[in-house]
Length: 182
Image 1 (cartoon, rainbow, N blue to C red):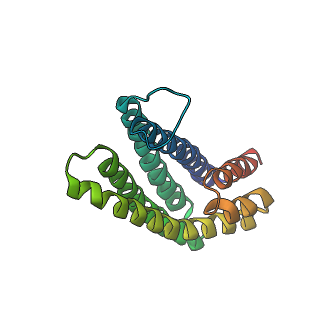
Image 2 (image 1 turned 135 degrees about the horizontal axis):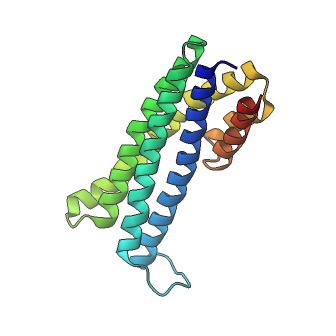
């Protein structure tokens, strides 16, 4: 494998790792904020809003850096074949959706303005739907990558990518390792 291809694959692996980390941290931040606001019962007596802000902020940063690495990885592998352009567009869509999703969460949880609190769920839902629409082109690009290098784990991970947000990226991460190890 050429050095440029290896660089692109390593960028894609880093992007997937950051995506998994970001999604997990966003989930923990949302959970902590729900515990803090007493909307869900937990064995934890109380969760500090600082914990929620901490997890949400780190999750947002990891997700945004991950989607920018996804863009850079597909852009770096583009000279090999133009079929990976779809991954570039999908990564841009996911970047925009991450911003909307995180803004919506912040508005719902931490805004003192009633109008911003009411706007939060719509932004979060719009970010989710746009992210789902961006995941499809990314999954197609990963599938084509798995087909090109004949790695079944990447093809299956691409199919699972937009259905199971942690399992699919994990499968892709380990599938890309097979390409790097060749």
